[in-house]
Every structure is written in C-alpha cells, then in structure tokens.
Length: 208
Length: 208
Image 1 (cartoon, helix red, strand yellow):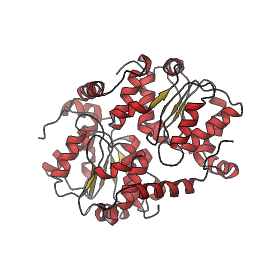
Image 2 (cartoon, chains in turn brown, blue):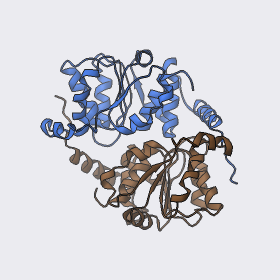
Image 3 (cartoon, rainbow over the protein chains, first blue to last red):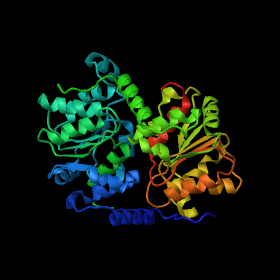
Image 4 (spheres, each protein chain N blue to C red):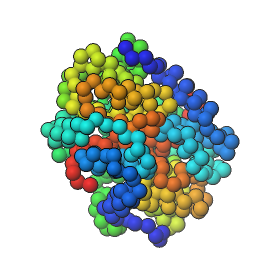
C-alpha cells in the first residue's frame, strides 16, 4: 500500500487550507474569496489569484443570478460537463450550444469560429444569465460584439478563455469595457474550463 | 466590430507557432513534440513543457495503442468529454466509470475516494489501454497499487492529476517507478483535464 490520503473531504479541506496559507487574498472582496480559492485549486497555482480582475458587483450579481435559477451559458462542453449539479441550488439549466446541428453552417455564414457562432443560439436566454467562457477567445469577443449591438445583458460574465491568440486580448477588452455587465476574468494567457467550472461551483453555494 | 482573428485554423497555426518560438523543446523527443506543444496550448503556459517527465517509449507506445483502437480510460468526465472524437482514427472507446451507480458504495467499502474506487471497473479493460488521469491524485495512486497487485498493464499512463494534496506526490511515485508502463506526467501541482485531453489529442493523430 502506498501512503496517501484517501479521504476526499479531508483532501479538499487541506487543499483549501494550503491555498489560503500561500495566497495573497488581501485584494479579493469577501464575496469572491471562495471563488479565488477554488480557481487556484482547479489549476494547482496559487499565483493565478493575482491575475483575477473583477467588477465590484461580480460576486453579489453572480450569486443572486445563480440562486434565482439563471441559465448558465457555456462556450464548450468541458465547462458544461464539469459544473457540479448538486451545487446548483437554483436548479439552473446548464447550456452549451456548440454542438448544435446548425452551428457549422452558421459559422460559415458569419465567417467566424463555431465557438463564436454558437452564441447566436444564446440570444433568447442571455437576459440575466451567467455566461461561462472557458475556452474560446472568439466566443468572448463575439459576446462583447453582441452586447455592443444591443443584445440582452447577462447577470455575470466569467471570462476565462485560454491560450496564445486572442485570450489575453479578449479578457482585456472585457475588463476595460464590460458593457455594464459584472464580470470576473483571469488576465493573460491562462484560463480554461477547469477554472471556469471552479468559479461557477464557488458562486453556486456557500458550501466549500 | 472588434478587431480579432475569426479563423479557427489560423488561430491554431499562430498559437502553435508562438509556442514553438517561445518553448525550449530541446529535451523533448520528436515523437512527443506535438504532445508538448498541445499541452502548453491547452493551459496557455509554455513553461509547463519544462515540467514534462516521460519514459523513452511513451510516444511510440501511446501512438501504437491509440492507432490499434485501445480503450481510453479517463478518471473524470471532463477528460472524456474533451477528447476530440474525430481525431481518434482508431475509433477508440472513451470510458469514464466515475458516475457508475456502484461506485459510491464501492468507495465506502474500500474507504477511499470515488475517483479511486471507479478504477475497479477498469480491470477488464486495463490490458493495453491508454489511461488518462486529469483530475484525481487518488486515481493515480490507486492505479499504481493495482499494478503492484498484478493488474494488467496499460500501454501508456498519462498522469496529469492537479492540485495541492497528492498531485505532485502521485506523479513523482509514477515517474520514479512506473511499474514497467510507459508514462508521461507533468510534475508538480499543475495538471488537469485540459492538459490530459491535449495529450490524447496529440497522440491520436499526426494532424495538428
């Protein structure tokens, strides 16, 4: 037998304790503290907390929307798959339109990526939703364009696209002009579905 | 209109070019080069390549197994969900047993996590499989215990559990004694489902 902890609850507790001991959380508002800790937990990096950028209303707006059952609109299936359903006390629908049959054709017509085109199918659900972008910079850019064009406002945008082309730029665009929508981003190249899932899981319930 | 690239293929090409320009790939064997680039791509961090540890046979063993249709055994649904099916030229089954109905009871009996207990259901499929662990350190520890107990050998272990308790330790245990199974790990706390998916997607086909 190898010596290691087999107690899931204990592993969570110790993990969060390590993060809180190592992290500088002084900049993080109380209602985003658990989000910051869970985002660090999801990627194994405490210093990612230093790259969180957020609007002052983000924590309250996200909690209220999730508690009220707002739909969670995800840019990729990994985000939709990772959200812990038992934490969604509002019974929120978790929606990813990327694999919808009309999306490839829509992407050709719009001359954009499937990830961006898939957002057209979000329009009827956008008002008051929680948007969770954990993969595609083009999805976040497109959302901002839709808001510029008068699309209904989500309650919160979690902007965590990842990568080397457009990720940092799309998050900077959101942080500099969030179109009156509360937001949380991790600036720079880092991001991804696990961090996005962690953010949703943190805002959905006070349970650690 | 915001100015950004909307061409998915172009975004991929430019992303991989940036990684190859910034990364030190001198230590990476030719048959793991695309894996290294995709792993960096998945997390937005070029320096993660410096933390890759692997056995010399890993690239060849993984490619051969995947091409022959070996099952891909995943510790969590995010990994199973993220693997691009159109890249699986061997038509490989992608299997995650974590949500199987018997797993919670099995975890109680075994006094371990559900992630570790779920591996009991892998036994009939282990021989020659590709194991993709992208979340739970306890799953990787348990796999090593099963191998110590005489379980059939996978063709390749991708060890990318993430976090603060057991992740670094489980990967170090594998790297120091891989029980005669080829492996790739990212040492330390970093890891996760996106990196694991990237590794599978890279080994499954030569297409970039």
